[in-house]
Image (cartoon, rainbow, N blue to C red; front, side):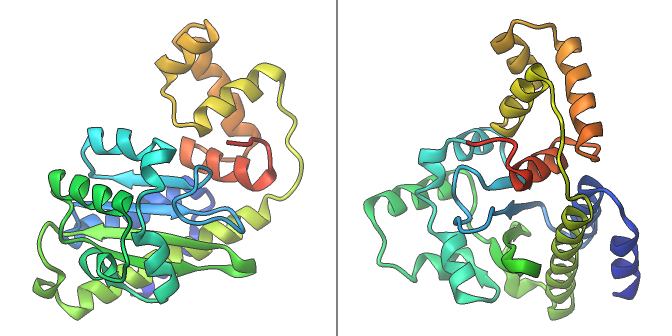
Length: 236
């Protein structure tokens, strides 16, 4: 376990931290996972929550990006309130459930999201996050050691993200066009979609994105979004 923690502590980029944690969990058999970084005083399904998801059906992710659909999901808030690991099925039964909750559960089943579990993550200065994992089968088939490693690595990764955010406090000066591109990045739009919206070429959008990442001291979209929200550079 110590080698995982040592590696995480040595990483200097938020994106690198998240992708390292993803790789560890995949090596342990996880087929899909997500990390929900929630701004202070908001819930883990708010529109401003940054979701880093891997292994989920693309159509499901498209649905989850829609704030109205995401708000129907009671599972993250219930698990955060519970304060410890819980399966999705257990969280569903913590009701009472609204008609919208039931609609969300039906959609989950349609996309094969049945056996997963959630883990609450806690960081300094009240920065909480939620993580979910799915082996594609009941967690009762996995060892306590495997589940413990996933929980520990996820917690360590979240704490490292929080530390990196604090280490890079300060102001960021963006041009008007960079600001526009950043706002669409935060909303989850692809390079081609942003190019169409702003009437720019995809290569031009890529150039702006690289400049934004450099100014935010990160190397990828997730890190940029997390920093942008923390610094108050965008409102969504």
